[in-house]
Length: 262
Image 1 (cartoon, rainbow, N blue to C red):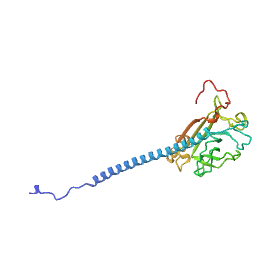
Image 2: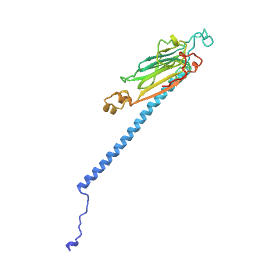
Image 3: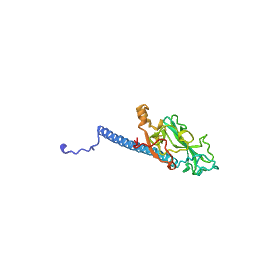
Image 4: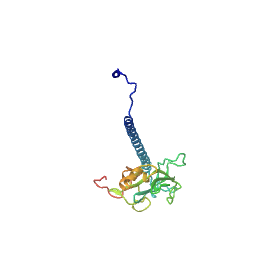
C-alpha cells in the first residue's frame, strides 16, 4: 500500500530557478532600455542636425536675396544718380581670417523682425560677433537701416540669424578668377562696381546647447575636444549669386577662354 500512496506535496520553483529567471528578465530589460536610449539619441541627433541645416539654409537664403538685389550707382550716372539724390550706395567685402564682413545696399530687404519699420531699400551689414553668454563661439548677425539715413561709418542695429558659426566667407568674381582681396565700391579699382558673381561659403557647428561649439559632451570627453571631433560636427553650405545690376558693368580682369571651377 505504501508504494501506491499519493504525495500531498505540491511541486514549485527552486531558488536557483527563480534566480536564473530573474537574471534573464533583467538582461532583457537592460537590452530593451539600451535599444530605446539609442533610438532616442539617434532621433535627437538627427533633429539637432536638421535644425542646424535649416538655420544654415535660412541664413543663406537671406544673404543670397540681398546680394542678388544689391545696388551700386555711379556718381556719374545722371539718369539713376540725379544731383538731387541724397542716399548713397555701397558694396564692400572686408576679409578677416575665417570670417568676412559684408556691407551692401540692396533693393530687396525683407524685415526679419515682425512689424519692423523697414522698407525694401536698405543698408545691410553681415558680420560675425562673439556669442552672448557662450564664450569662444561666434554668431552671424544681420544689421539693417534705411538707405536714406545710412552714412556707412557706423553699423546699423543687428539681429542674430545663425548660431555657432565656424566661418563666413564672401568672395567676389573679378573676371578671370575669384577675388580674395578687399572689394570696395567706394575706392580703388572696384569703385562704383558690383562683382559679376559672388560666392558665399557658410559653415556652422551642430547646434547642441550646453557644449562648446555645439559638440556633444560625450564626443568631447572621448576625444579631448580635439580638432577632429570639431570637424565631425560641422555643416557647410555654398552657393554662387549673380547680382542683377552687375550686368553690363566691366569686370576687373579680362575673362579667360577656359574657367576652372574649384
